[in-house]
Image 1 (tube, rainbow, N blue to C red):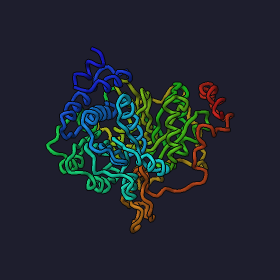
Image 2 (tube, rainbow, N blue to C red):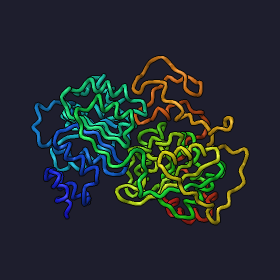
Image 3 (cartoon, rainbow, N blue to C red):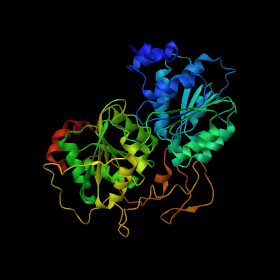
Length: 485
């Protein structure tokens, strides 16, 4: 069957079918096949599927059809007909890219807004008619406060990655946005999982919704092979360099628990001849966008990220995800490894686990319902002696318990989006009065120790060429020569 025939059977308009054909997709994914007809029929929807199964197209395709098929009333500047809310900047940018890709043959206008960038260009865009607005909650409320956006004409509301928004503490911001919308509208709630909190939100938001659940809650894709290396924390960095160099991996997404740890690990990889960059909530939006673009086009082999990147990153055929440290929330493990094994492609997820993290590993295995394979020490790997004066990314041990993670121990002491308010104590006992930015999880917002020199030098900052190990020097020598250009 052809692409057009497959998607045409769902009732999509010809300009949309043409755009789908141009992307090279052949058949709808299960979530698309089930969700699109319900949305086209005008019903509210509660949909969940494993990450990487095409949820974004599951709502962008039908909303484009509905908006193009219905006659808009008076088109006013800054008055969108469709609002898509996402938890992070990266996800907002990718959803908007999907809207533009599938709507390229339509006359609909779209825009994306998020924090961390100058608000003035967004204000200029809002002075013209906008049909589809993709936004993060905090920046949307900034515009609403300045009266640069009018939400009274929203016909379709989409909450994408709704469980992540709740986890980041955006529920109050969501309720503020809902209060600005007309009561008569179509509501679509998409999520990677159906948690009890999501069902509670859906009960108050959705009206007799259709429900689509492609896979059971908190399951990892069967296309992702999983393995664990049991290794002391202080030897993890050497093992990571060995795995990347010896196996000649050119696209690896590495997760750490903390922003400080991400910076230090990226620096270490650079010193050993492996081009890498860190992304997290403290990085500027331009730095995050640049690192993601380089990682996607293959010019940056390794991207080190905190859990801000566990959702929304859509990297085509990403082969490897490595958990340098296990998350202390088991569900985040599923979201992390969901960056690989997407859209029918196989992937490999590796976790480097210290004995202190055994409790986290047991919790993850209980969640996914199976034991993860323990891998033997790689042949030829000999960890170097540990320098007791070297700084490590690990946290101090506490009475035999797993190391505390200041990013994820507690939610933010402040409501996202608020600029003022009474300071509250963080889990570390220190006072914070700064609200998390759009795209910065409340877990990442907790107060972090500041250490001089923690900023990653970035892809062009490696000046210690002589420190490369033999295999990685041969592997990355051509790229290293061009990094300064």
